[in-house]
Image (cartoon, rainbow, N blue to C red; front, side, top):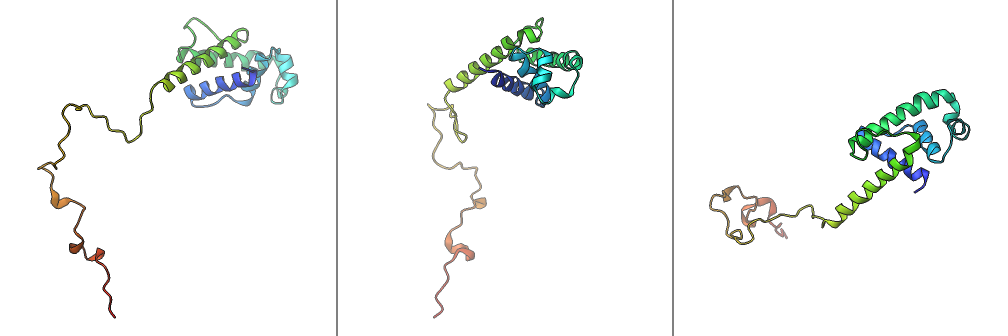
Length: 159
């Protein structure tokens, strides 16, 4: 897994849990940290981060980003309640999210798919009767004989 795919995994989790994806600056900070860059190097190498002071990136944006990721990963049950996401353990956190995704996908694949119109019958030993129910009002049936429906009658040859 590379930094971009790890960023996408974290972004998708945030989107699922909070309803909004990470913004561009947050994504750049995550990618930079995963690539082993300092906040100064992130500022120098990424387009959006160039517009901000280093202290703002580290003390405000990154602080709130780590706080957000901590809350999301706790809500997802990926990290323990006493753990916090930081730049030092970001790779580990991203790997844990990826591992959980792989496990949940393998569980879903191991279960046979259910067709959308499938009817489950719990009465296999007592099959349903094939004759119509006596309580059904057949006068309300949409099926009409052709002779009683003038709109369905065949046109007569007038020659």
